[in-house]
Image 1 (cartoon, rainbow, N blue to C red):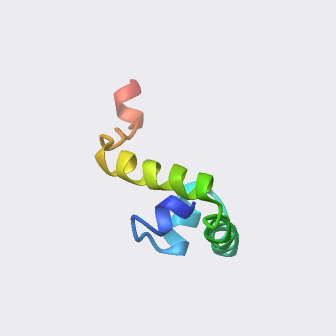
Image 2 (spheres, one colour; image 1 turned 90 degrees about the vertical axis):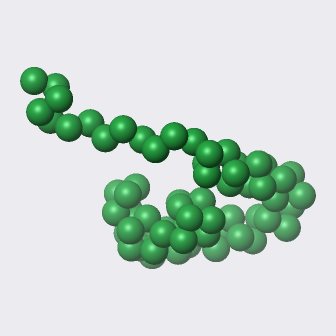
Length: 68
């Protein structure tokens, strides 16, 4: 949830819809991770994840008609 909101700039509402949660849950999760970035290990891990997500291929959405 943090990675959808901060590096990708997705709104809290859109991030909540994407993960099937309430907007307030996403906001709470983002605050928790932001506080944990004070830990160098967590900060380093997130610094590595962000560029990996930017370079990952876009997900292919499953369409019902493709299954037929």
